[in-house]
Length: 220
Image (cartoon, rainbow, N blue to C red; front, side, top):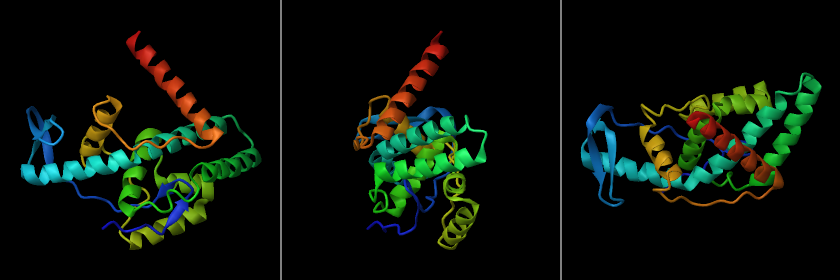
């Protein structure tokens, strides 16, 4: 049974417990076949037994599918906020805008993520870092202040959690990366969560335009 997380620190991010990963090493010729989904997970030789690996893969896949859209929406909003903040030189204007951004996040997600489990929160934190390059600690510090970030981190450390965790797609987070790649290539379904607020819709459109622009630039 999943434990519900009671430590909500920003309107869209939930604390999570770190998940230990099995030891893996590069291999170009080996992979593990997922009999349920009929796919081979290449490039890695699994040191743990295939049974253990497949159990972890199915668990990872399930949680990534359940939080993927939350990560996409919140990351798009965060990146949009960061773009706007870069135009402000006045600390007063930045502070005023951060307060507005905080309210927009609350409007979009409300208590939805507050009721998310610790495990889902952990996956969400990792995916947000993957999309924005910001740790949860950095987000709290910017949007809620350094003092609150410090105390939240201290509280989390006591509970075996870390707001400063990053994302390592070729190491401990290799299965998360694989699940995301399958979702983005259309080979894996995920739980849909449509944006609610106009701010979120605008942020998603902006993110999509950036993505297309980067793709065109890469192909040209």
